[in-house]
Image (cartoon, rainbow, N blue to C red; front, side, top):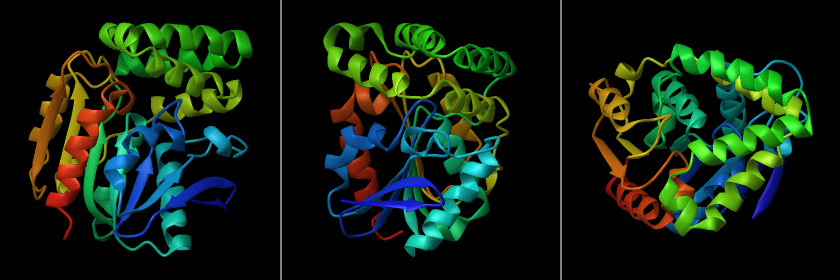
Length: 265
């Protein structure tokens, strides 16, 4: 594995083959994709810590979906990536949709976990309130983390897979309060991409207990993918919002089959 620092962003590159670009969600990092790495054998995997997250928390200035998109395009340009399969989780799925809608030649396929087009108005307000709490420091981040562990992960996962709870807890607690607050503000301001323009094959994976990307919303999103080469919606049982962490084997299987089916895209 090679670690690049591109425009102050931490970028991991590993493996050979068709390129795969991985875009994590709010509170995540490049490590969010570790549970799915077995499905990405024989691929050139590029995992990015978005500005304000993980090892890229030193990024200055306001954050936005548009800035994330431009950062990813810059990374692809620097690494010579002209076409890739794109993986997104949560907020990262919004970023991937914008890339696919505006840069179709760059996108061979989209595999989106816990996907949403944009937050509903109530969630935008909650994001801004969460940003305020994050700025209070360690105690605020602790409170945010504990609340998310109770709502973003299914009850079955909490009982059956405590290591997944530890994974999510560690991911959130490693976020600095100010950087996390700016990431919350980026999500609060997110606007939907023109998904009708997406031409690539699309895989949408969510959990039946995902309150951020509930199955009915994901199916409604799929209905708007009029021009996608193909689309598949998968709803995982007893699963919350952190699909790759809560149901890694099922997600690996779906992703492996999807990439194999679109290996020539």
